Length: 320
Image 1 (cartoon, rainbow, N blue to C red):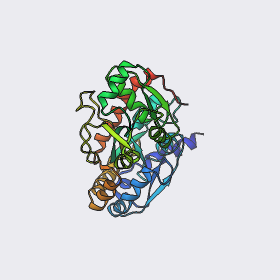
Image 2 (cartoon, rainbow, N blue to C red; image 1 turned 180 degrees about the vertical axis):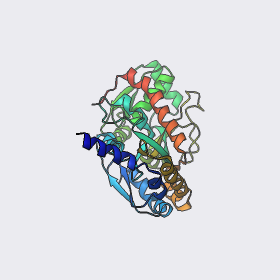
Image 3 (cartoon, helix red, strand yellow; image 1 turned 60 degrees about the vertical axis):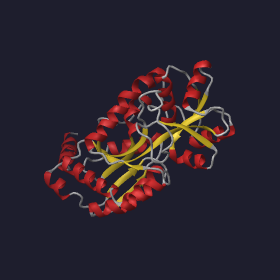
Image 4 (cartoon, one colour; image 1 turned 90 degrees about the horizontal axis):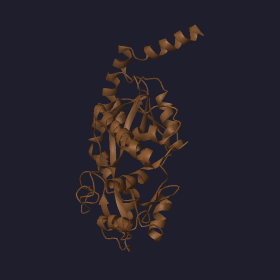
């Protein structure tokens, strides 16, 4: 027993040796995507993969470990050796997971460390183009006159599309009626069919339908207007609350990964994101480049933990 403990202890700290950090990377780096292949995370990483491989002078292995809202992949990376060879792509909502999930096999704020930002997609509050609601003010006023009756759809209990609208209601002292779906697609279908009044979702499912004239965007939830919908005002601009919520994708590493390794990966990531071909691919898909330092990403994670805690407790959300 003592022998195994000594070996494990030596293995952990061997990976933190100055020489190992100095030689990094000396072999391929695995980046875990905790969702199904072909989704947004997979797209983003494949867009920057060639540039990251150039910057690191090593191959990148993209490994999909989907399941449990990304927590299977998250736990796998959290428990990996802190040597920079196993990294995780996730969204900053990860910081709120300790509030949302009753039993997490890891602590995102303690067992992972920030590396850098990747991309962000604004959220748009949208209604059916045939709806009587022409503005966010119309929705808010209707909710005030009919508390708990104006229906909105989300991709599931505890999903960002759920929490966003609850935050909006909290900021304006109104209550909407939540209709949870198993994913964004069925929620969008019911919005198009007139079964719900609105939803707040990322640009990827909504902008094509807005461009086709099937949906109307009444607000975006970021601090500033989005280049993807430059004519749509922000919630803050309209006077309905201080919101700055976007789907922000980030790169994480196991806790205790040496700072020189974190810095090397962070610098390589930022350099890759600055390349024109990467910017073009992100832009066409509706994403904005998100270059952030490790400390800035850590602050984004802490913000998610702080801002969503009271809302999750108020809603009594506790996912097994």
